[in-house]
View 1 (cartoon, helix red, strand yellow):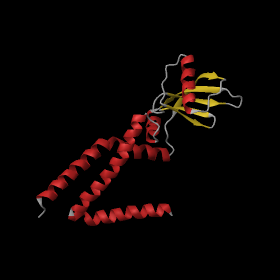
View 2 (cartoon, helix red, strand yellow):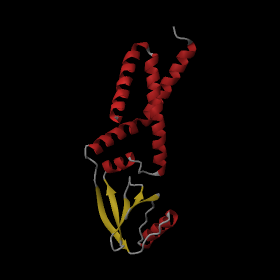
View 3 (tube, rainbow, N blue to C red):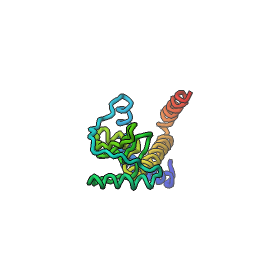
View 4 (cartoon, one colour):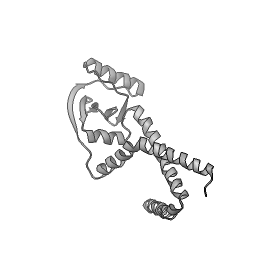
Amino acid sequence: MASVDSMNSRKLMVYIHLSLAALFLPFLLMMPATGTLYLAGIQGSQKKTEAFRITEAPPAEDAAQDAFFREQFARQNIDYDFEYVRASGKDFTFRPTTRVHYVASRDDNGTLTFSKVEPTLLKRLIELHKGHGPMLMRWFEGAFGVSLVLVAFSGLWLAWTATPYRKVTLLSFGAGAAILALCLL
């Protein structure tokens, strides 16, 4: 028969496991759903509309670049706030991209064309999945990752401590580890 201490620790582990799993369940469902759709080529869409053009070149330094772009939006009387700019070659993306946002592309003549981008819900969710959401959400996704590991290990521990589930738990875990190992070859 189990001791009082082991029953209390098991009850606490079940409580922690269920609380974390329920808290992060929306993300636990969203991540594989959006990832699977993305891999299947269903990536959502976005409406892109040209907003304005400039011929000035943005500075190379991040802080100066940030101020430069904020000034360009203000000059156009566009009330738009972004958290950071992601530069890639001749393109600039103003993040987060999980909402209506802007992008800018430089052509061969040096003209920067700014476009307003309106993503569909699926596109927004996929951008969230990729970590392109608000900074607060990026921190939350980090916590989600840690919690997912805790939920997995606490579930594994709970299954292992229930004698009838040991064999199936060991076999399932071993099969998963073998599949991962095969994928790395």
